[in-house]
Structures are given as structure tokens and as C-alpha cells.
Length: 213
Length: 189
Image (cartoon, rainbow over all chains, first blue to last red; front, side, top):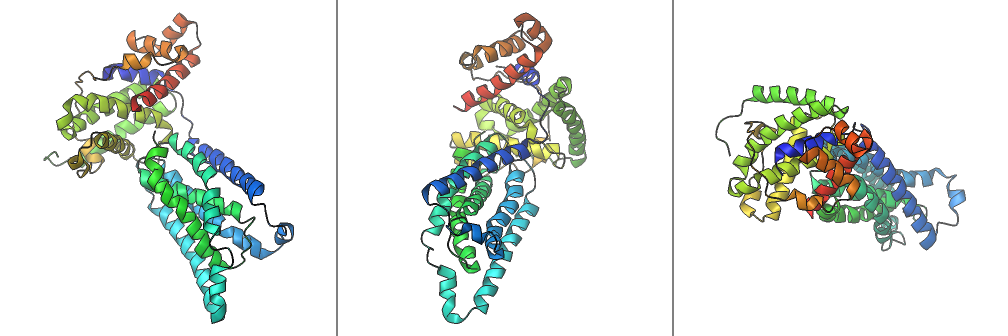
């Protein structure tokens, strides 16, 4: 086909563009991914039996705040990476500062604790399973967000994969919080991060396959 | 790489011109969209000919693939991003894809620096692309293939096609739109 034949074809297929396409796709993908993660959690591991009482404690909301903050900060990064040529520097800075803030709190807690309690605060009882569960719970969100990204135009695939992986990890963590028995900030800062880093790394490696458009 | 320095004021003029056309196109103005694609493909052809000197026969294929990618990504254009930067990012991505699939390692170490190179020289004479779109067209369902064939082969307008096929104008537009998406999937294999 000649290029001057392709152009009339493309113009004939022109529809008025949806200016909110990115927002819409991300909203759909995040709701589907989060709902699927919660359903998967409830039907496999189950939630904490004391969850109703926990909802009344501020500490539980603090625990929820970490993945929630990471998710909120990762959305602009992923969304900017879906726009060809858009700068992402400010979005990354926001994400990194949110993450740094969590570690500041974790370190303060660690330093304030008596020396022999520190290992307990950091490792809890479930450190070996926590990142694995988070990574597994992030899978539905990663799949949903891959769908969202394929319909947009990511041009920096590895970075987009990392951002989407991290966002899925944050949503997976958000679901896992309903089951996680640990109640220490250093534990969250360390093991939740590792849990989120797994899908982030996987996203970086899989981006070329999952985001083709 | 072109040796002549790129004129930034000229590039700025290109930006203004393309931006005006693209904004009209985003609201559904097909005439503005056609001019946008023509102006843009002129620059793109110039750049690709210099870039893909060792793949001269593939220039039109890559060009068409970029145009289709741009078309499919139209809804990601945002006001805050210059049109030239937006388009150049898509081009860079698609050219890298092409070079990767041709396993030409040296070329990968020579990335397209910025949009100034893309919008340096415009070339409007085209060669035929080698890929046989007709064979791909046959794989599409009738309601997408027919509108594409009328509009492409017979050069008809959307309203003429609508009258001929008895379909509504919006059905023709949607058929062509979906057909192009399906075609781009087929091209990628």
C-alpha cells in the first residue's frame, strides 16, 4: 500500500478523541485489579479475624497508609509514562520522597526501640511469606494495568513496566494488609517494599511483551 | 547523522503548525487531520531515509507503521507536551522496534537524539511499501474490510461509502477505525 493511500484511510477512521482516556483506563484497571486481589485474598488466605476491631485503631490506618501512599504516588508516574514524550521527573521525585518518608518513620521507630527488640520489629513472625503473598496478590492488578497500558502509548517500556509493577505491588499490599498480622512500621517498610519490588522487577522484564501496542 | 545544524526557529514553526492541525483533528476534523498526517509524514520520511540508509526498502513500511501507531495513540496527546516531542517519542519507539527486529546491533547504539532531528527536512515523495496490505485486509471481518476498501481503493469519502453500503456514517468510521487497529495487530504478527 502507498502511504498516500494510508492517510485517507486513517482520516476516515478518525473519531473525536476521548480526552480522559488515560484516567478512565487507569480507574477501570485499578478497580478490577484491587477487587480481584481482595477476592483472591478472602478466598485463599482469609482476612484477620480481629479486622472489625482493628478498623477502630489508628495503627491499622497507618499500616494502610503505606501502600495507599505508594499507589497514589505511582499512578502519576505510570500515567505520564503512557504519554509519549511527557516528562516524568516530578512524578518520580514525588514517589521517591513518599518512599523516603516511610523509611524515616521506620528508622525513628527502630532507634527509639530498645536494642534487643529491634530484630523483632524488623522481622516479625511472617517475614518470609509476606513478600511472596504480596507479589501473588499483585498479579491481577498487573494484568489489568497491562490492558490499560496497551490501549495507551507507552514508549519507555522498561520504565513503564517498573511503574506498573510497583503500582500493582502497592495494590497487592493494600489487599494483603487485611490479612497481615504484623504491627510494626519497620516490618512494613522492609517487607512490604520487598513485596512491591518483586512485581516492579517482573514488570521491568515483562514490559516488552505485556505493553506492545 | 545529518551534519548540518538544525534550525531551532524552523522547528518552532513546525510545532505551531502541527499543534494547530492536531487540535482540530482531536475534535474530529478529518481535513485538518489529513494535513497533519501529510506534513508529519514528510518530515518523518526525510528522517527515516537518513536513519535507515541500509534499509531503504523498509522506509515506507516503517513510516506507515509509525502513522498507524500515531493514529492509535491519538488519545494520549496532552496539551502540556509539545506535539513534536510527542510524535518524536512514538517514532523513536517504533524505529527502535524495527531495528531490534532486524537485529542490527550497531544501529541500536545510535539512538535518535531529539525531535529536532525528526523535524529537520521534509520529503514528500513516497515509494510503495512492500508489505501487501491486501492480503492482510482479507483477514478482516466484512464490516471492517468493506469500509476500508471503499475508502482506500476507490478513494471515496465517508458519506459516499455510507450511501453505497447502506451503513450509517458513524458505522463506516467505526469500521475503519477498528479495521485499522486490527490491521496494526496483524502487521505486528
